[in-house]
Image 1 (tube, rainbow, N blue to C red):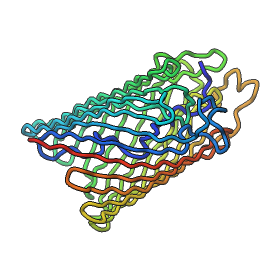
Image 2: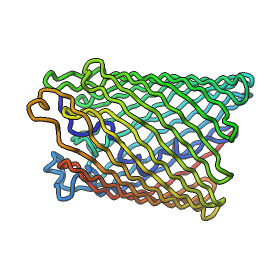
Image 3: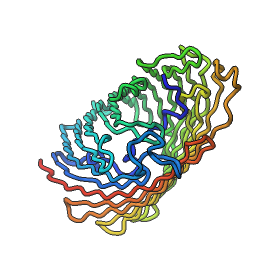
Image 4: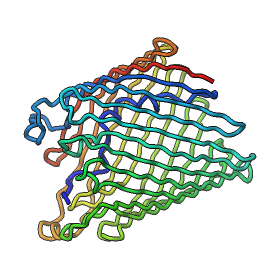
Length: 416
């Protein structure tokens, strides 16, 4: 087993920061019907492999000395919205192909889909059942791969709410997430995570609902092997309790608050146990019909694969503004700043002789500008420019990346 020096929880798709796929970019139609969407994205990424300044890709094991690449992503999507009385069914599917002009060994075909049934029985019972799949290429931000690795995540969700009276709600839910990797060396990260959650909500009398919740999470990594001298096993059990509310402070402002405590246990490697406070605070603001904004601050905990670390404490601030210049033109700017601090001494063979690892902190900054234009009722165009940086006191973890995107989508339908 390779001893990872970077947090596996931070692996993301290289295109996810720029735009969503056609299957998820548009809201489901409000009336029953079917539609098809054909589209393509052209993306130029000037630091595809997320390398530090001055590092030649060949030095990192890649078969090219070009740091950037242009990626074409043709796609086709299908959407359906079915209404039967108080029942609603949404179906979506998206097929796309990532084509890298200089690094064709990383080309991939991805299939994503979602089925959602929103049900209601009488005035007291409601809920939903959902099944979905997402596929994406593993980002190079934290993993150096010489072949494409397809990450497939399958999710199943079930939720039921019972309202004995209009100002009281009891909710239960069960979620299952299955993750798999196409490359053999990456299959040690395959996982199965289940979350059982119970909620009790009540009307505060001030126009907001207060929710008390408890959840139990079980994470399994079936292909993980424990290295005796430096045990790293991601299989865990986690209990979490939180209190949340959403408050409308007038017609133009909404506040969201969640605060809780999470405790994670590793049955096979108890020295990796950790716990702490988690939560987030959000603000949504719409001063005019054309201008809206949002602000969110959050704190979270994540386990890591490192042999000399246990977990990370992540704090993130994100904000954005949207301006509807006209019925066909929309301008967006959003950014985020994250601080990731590595914590804990696993007290294994290496840290016993070498001592606890030195302090490590990573800082992620992201800024995105986008322009969306609805050329006709069926054709939409998006242009976007994104800057991402990571600063770290850990050697080799720094990078800077500029990404430029142009997206075209053509809607066919809907048909009743």
